[in-house]
Length: 155
Image (cartoon, rainbow, N blue to C red; front, side, top):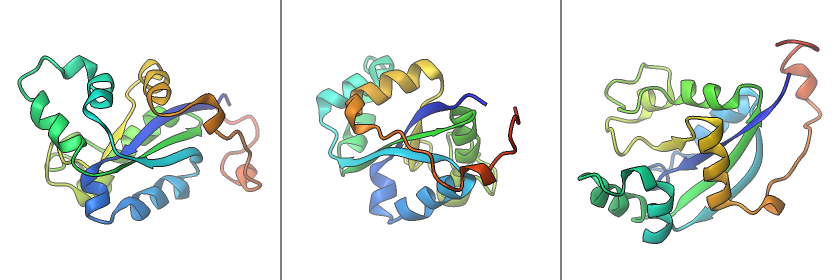
C-alpha cells in the first residue's frame, strides 16, 4: 500500500501539560512512522504563514498569541492513510465534543487548546511540512517491525 506523510504539531498546551510523550507513544503504538521531529518556538511571522486562511478572522489574534506562547514540537509521520488515521486518533476539534478514547477526548476540554494540530489533506500536509522542515530533515527509513503492522498486499 502506498504510504503518505502528514504534519503533526504538539501545541504549547501539550508541552506545558507534559503530554507530548504520552501522545507521541499513541501514534507510535498505532504503527505510524516518525520521520522528522524538532522543537521550536513559532514566531508571529510563521504563525501567519501556518494559519494563513485564518489571519483575517476575528479569532486570529488569540490564536497567534496562543501558538507563540511556548515552544511546540513539529513532526512528520508516514504510513498508509496517515492523514486520516491521525485525524481520527485526535478526535473532534473541541475536546468537549471529542469521543472518549481519542486524544482530544481523553486529554482536552477546549476548542483552541486541543493539544495537537494535524494536516487535514495531502495538500495541507505538503504545505505545512514545507513550512517547518527542509527536505534533508525528513528521514526515510523502514523499521524492522514494519512487516508486523500490515499483511503483504493489504489495502
